[in-house]
Image 1 (tube, rainbow, N blue to C red):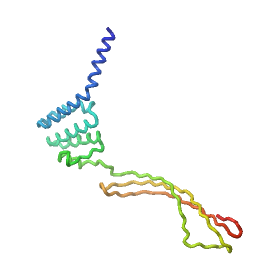
Image 2: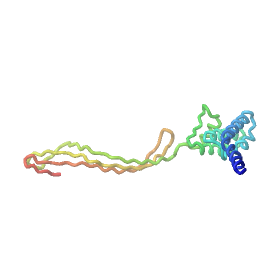
Image 3: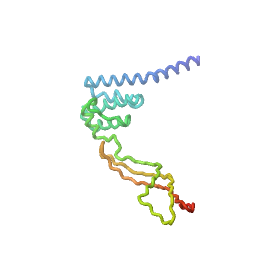
Image 4: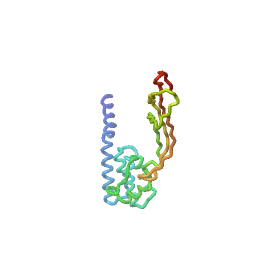
Length: 195
């Protein structure tokens, strides 16, 4: 008896969980049909239960886009902006395209910045210097030979980019670079070395 009751409780609570995503898809389809039919005032109440707990990311984007359109048609600018902000929370990389989004949603999207205004920049790396002798002076009375040895250096930099628009940005930054090389001068006659 207890096993039967436990199994009954399991199935009673398990089936709504499995069917919840399907129910929310049906809810979204119902809301789209209501929107197409021109019944705008009951759309928020239809979508509310699934928006709070049941929609996937893609479904939330579709639902908030539908709510944004609804509020724009109802001339409720504040609610339309809030719905569009919720859409951006669900998908921060969403960009309204005038070819597929309604034009009023596209113009509303221009009020919101979806790209970073300031971008931090950090760089680090290694370098080497290749010394090139332009004119060689010899202070020794005997001929000398010079060997140059490459040494590794490093560089670090940090800065910030101010993105003015999609194509232009202004960069302000600081950097430090350490370079080095070593020269060994050998007296040909004496065989002594100098650094």
